[in-house]
Amino acid sequence: MIVLLGIVGFLFAFSSRKNAEREVSKPNVKFVGENNLYITNEAVSKLLIQNYGGTKNIAKEALVLSKLENALNANPMIKTAEVYMTVNGTLKAEIEQKTPIARVQVKKPYYIDSQGFYMPLSNNYSARVPLVTGDVKKEDLSSIFIVANKIKHDDFLKKNVIEIHQNTNNKIQLKLRQCNFVVELGSVDFLDRKISNLKAFYQKNKKDQTLNNYSKVNLQFKNQVVCTKNVSNGA
Image (cartoon, rainbow, N blue to C red; front, side, top):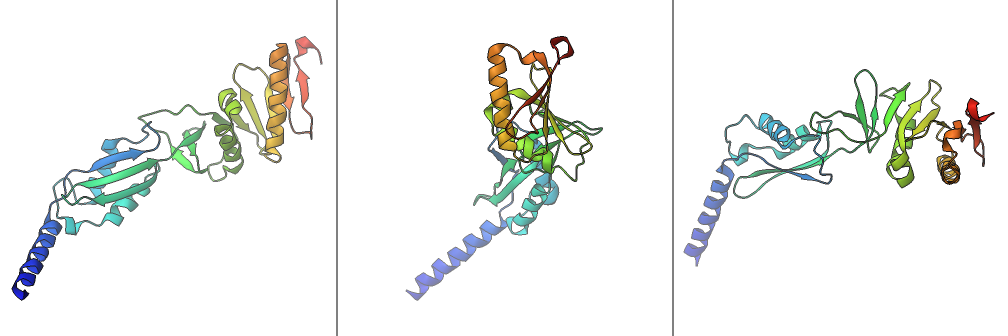
């Protein structure tokens, strides 16, 4: 019995040692969530290779998985990354990308992601999201994010809003698809009420075929929509 236990222990230790010494193969990358790739499989593999010592195989015991995860999570395209090793030495990474919800049109354009943070543009894929123009500062995206996030989760807004404009006084304007008027949203206070008023105005005037009679639709007044008609249609 003692001899048998010794043999089992020896085999277990030998197996564990061989497993630890097994060389790491080329990374296997899997993307979860959105299908559109803002960062490519090749780019993630390159990041992993750069952080575990080059392209040549190395022993499993020399690999620090937390270091690899930190390197991936530091990439501004990546929301979360999980890195793990299979028993046969395959290095695997599961990547969740950031999701852009608006594109800021400045000298060097960038996205705002679904958590309200900066996200660089991708050379691989261009997201169809509302444009953001005006006085926009990367360190203060709070009002823009609130409006962009509302648009993302509202079917009417998602279909119709093509631009978010922020004035120097942080007042927000919206531009709608195939409409000539500007929507004066103002501050983000009472946003749900303002959007409900916009929807009611839009549906009624679309039915009456009078949407293009207006140059401005002001939602800043409580429980009412104040409209400015085009000059050709009277004041």
